[in-house]
Image (cartoon, rainbow, N blue to C red; front, side, top):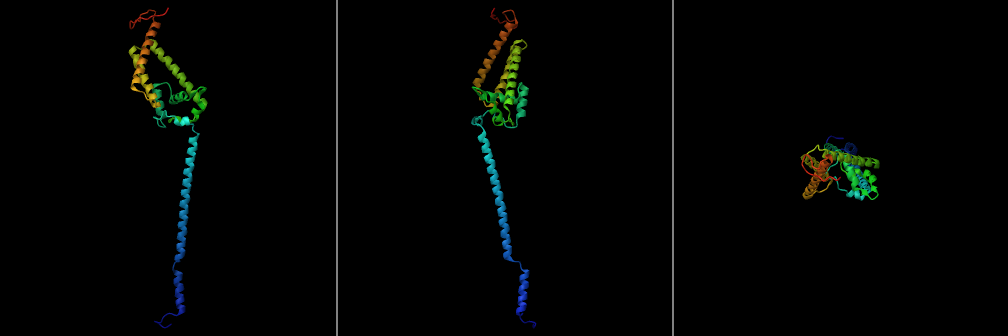
Length: 243
């Protein structure tokens, strides 16, 4: 080929082949990119579908669980002022001021509220205990419910006997008994309020007056029992003692 002359067909074909061999196939690259995008889109769609299915499954499970709870249990609204996980705090409060535990307190209230003509619905209470009382986290057997109720009743009887003896044995003065009754009344009112009972101020004052009146009567009658005289040597009150 003469220098400066145009290339012949063979040289042109060789140049085209060489150029074709070194240039990327744009169509193939585009196809590969589209395939990758489709695969990524499919993965995202599959993931979203799985999450949706999981959420629907959890929702169905929650609905099924809720449907298993009796309607009267769902409507029960006591103890709502105590959040879940506060059992230890409630227990410490009761141990400092009463003989009962938080477990016995809660179950005694439930036994009173779920009492029927044929007895207490202990199975219902035990199976739904976490739904009924926020600070109770485990279900109970009917036997465990009955044991807690019996423990509560025994402690109330013993505490009552202890208190009444203290009031009758002349150990406390009248002012001391007033203080004891005031403290006991305040604790009892607090527990009732936690259970969800709304106490009017007038009702509280009336209850305190009745309790004080009863305790004065108990003290006077106990003095008559302790002394042969019809006149109390401490306060000078006279009593009519039946022969």
